[in-house]
Image (tube, rainbow, N blue to C red; front, side, top):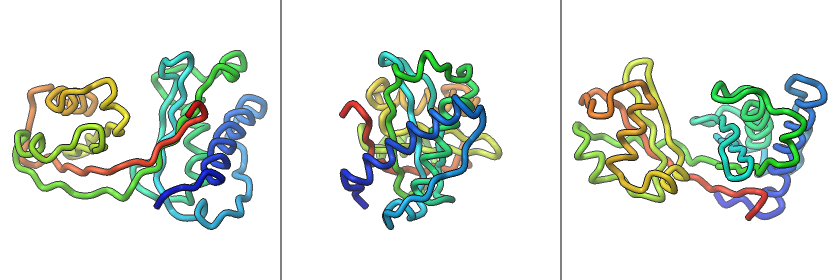
Length: 187
């Protein structure tokens, strides 16, 4: 599904409004009503906030559980105020933010027994990747390829994010891939 320009603008405005209300009300405000049928579809999203090109927050949903507009609303607020890697966003930072939204396709299971098999089927610059073993899981959006160009390093860093050693592999690791439609304020 391609998101048209009007719906993209609406989603970016929703993300901004969620953050703005978070600054004034200091809580997640109720989701406003959105009329677009496309924005009512169940979709998973990530909202990434950057300040002067530096990551300032990124939170999201890996699987669809809410309407697209609601998922963006909640994830924008979480990126600004709930990302454990950063302190809550301040009013001074708000005007410097660049908001970026990634809408995910449904997860596609990739059946591999070895890391080599995974590397053979991985498509750089296109694939988002989710690794899971037991309760531990980690994902990288396709945008991470911009900073981790080498597939071996991409997978190693994702394993580290999951809390595993970089050279770890188990045939029990579950692997999923997904794609994103991504857009931002400065595009």
